[in-house]
Image 1 (cartoon, rainbow, N blue to C red):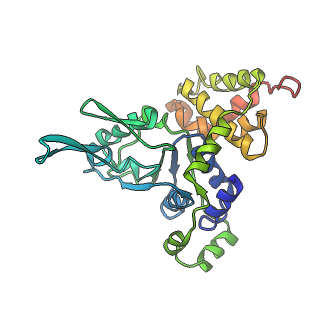
Image 2 (image 1 turned 30 degrees about the horizontal axis):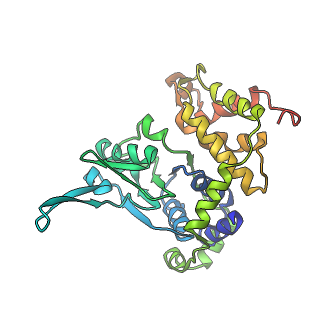
Image 3 (image 1 turned 90 degrees about the vertical axis):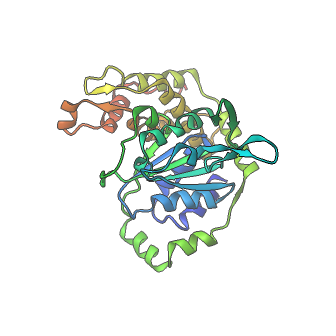
Length: 309
């Protein structure tokens, strides 16, 4: 089912199998995805294709500087007929919510996502309103054009399970893209291949996969290796370890295994951990990145042997 879902998305997002699989892993791990890249490489297309491939409700929120928190979460409106306030849900109440150009929203508006991304609910006037399950925020941002943007704070970045970059397609994929016709028309014709109940069963199945104690110890050591690193001002939080475990479980299930191996952790460590790290100014001048620190941790932490896993 994972392969069928990935193949359906690839009908529109061509030549990006690895990125498509990462996005699906994020969805099945019940996490949120940040897609960061230059305009025109398919960030929003990936989000729309993923939404269209699943029989689930999806919404799109275009972030602008004048967007208000209530435009996302919803507001209470007075009903003259009943003489009471009624809650009118905002676009965040969907299975997949696409937050387009999230860094163009003000910090106040960005903060409207903090509660719902972590607790799967929105509190309005003291009343909690749960969002449907599964629930995923797919946010996009352009890292080049920074005029009129507000960088995402650390607390917001830490709530994204993964951050990926689409990158430019290879020559053959770009030729196929041009030959395939307008992307919008292809998205409109893209059939869903997975129902909401099937998606929920896949999520539950991945969550039950066996994880050996030695592998849990290895995962924690990799995450902990970023804390106190001389090139970092901020290392990975415990939430990073939880996110990495959930994503690794999905990767193992998609590979047809009922157990995890160290390669599952290694393959996902950079997209899950790197965006949560803050590099010191001195290290940044030397060209060091969060991804470099994660790769260094993977090299330095001993890999469990097969007998221990």
